[in-house]
Image (cartoon, rainbow, N blue to C red):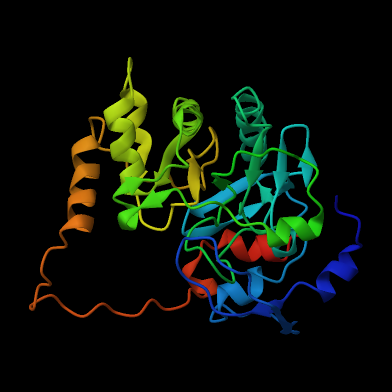
Length: 307
């Protein structure tokens, strides 16, 4: 709930934070001291967005691309619901677009019907106004990304401290080429249910899990195409929703290639087990620079000053 005055919010609007990167869950960076004064387009975006404690008082809208955008009018996933708990509350990343929160509620209700599952542990979503995060993700900027932990919750009354201390469980073996013995049919059922939801654009998961499901899935296999292999997603799966209808400022990703994607996933696994030799002629990778406010859609400046 927004319970601070606009004046109080203005005084806390610009906060800094430590460097980020990557896409996996990592320890949150400690907050940096406030940055006062006017915003400039050459400011590092994560230092601005990462310190805003509350959403803008604007109509809900995802703006820009998943890895280069922001969100207006975000809503907060309640810390605890009948079939979910938000984890790592100290990060203040349980904010998203209304349809994202609705999706989590729906998926968690399904999860609670699975043997041994009481619902879901929900990891990072987005910051209150989206934008680049202070640590841990390149995406999650528009309120349409969700990390769901692989843990089958046996209880949904974790204290705030327990949610900081507990870890998501690792499901991979051999560097992500295979699933380990923690993987079971309920994980596949949960992922299938999520992928069959028309709101979902794609789901990122470590390659061995995709290959395993390619080997075990029966019946209609069309949902498998939404499961996309990606490193770092071995203790959670990352759900990305489509831009909602009418969100003209939201940029969807390119369509997923035709087919179930199983051959592609097998190539990932083959490269894990038998890494190809490095190309001596390949150019050196350039270090990723921090996005500035100028790199984001112009509407994001309005989101930052939007009450």
